[in-house]
Image (cartoon, rainbow, N blue to C red; front, top):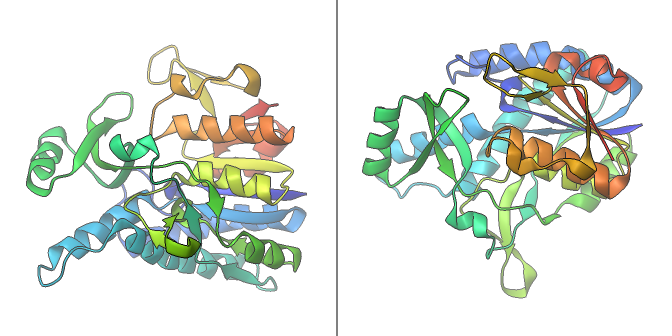
Length: 303
């Protein structure tokens, strides 16, 4: 069965880790064994997040005052190459006989998307509130709290909805030839249709779960698997009464009831995939992929 597997930034960076490459290589090495086991039984296409990394690259670009800061589309492309390399490196060790390819992927967005006026996608390091607000004032950022306690603050940027995967035909050919494809990293490089239809970069970071949903539909995937750092969808999250939900119905699911910029897009992606394809989607912990697919862990979203 063909699976599109979306792995969060926690595949490379766990909560509390520094943004160093050593931590990312170690964490991806641990994730690779699970992903390799999945790939031996299914046709897997990997989509990854880039929130921490693209934020770090933006800070690095701002540190040099001899040139204007790089725009987010260019930083998104840079993050795709960096993260794709780390993923390939780990997956080649786990699957030495498999051809693994990272595709630099552009994703078309609508420049009139209202998300451009309401930044919601967290990127970069975590700050305390006072530091975040000071950086926002200094650099013109939008910042917001994340998590149930509201103590973690991060920069937020526009996150328009993905409309089309530009390299879809090439990705499909690679998948059908037997390659394990890493693509649409960070949701894809955000582009709009310029003069004559040629893609032009825009200042945004696309949600990788929504891009994975679009890709899964276009590739006729049988399942969408969203892997993160929690073991499923919870009711009353962050309270003493929190409890994991085993099964949800896409027809009654409301993404607006979940946190914007974190679980909300995952719920939307899972719901949209289930309704569009008639196939279930799953949300769960990175290290429990096989158990999630078999129903022993995670949350299943039924059409």
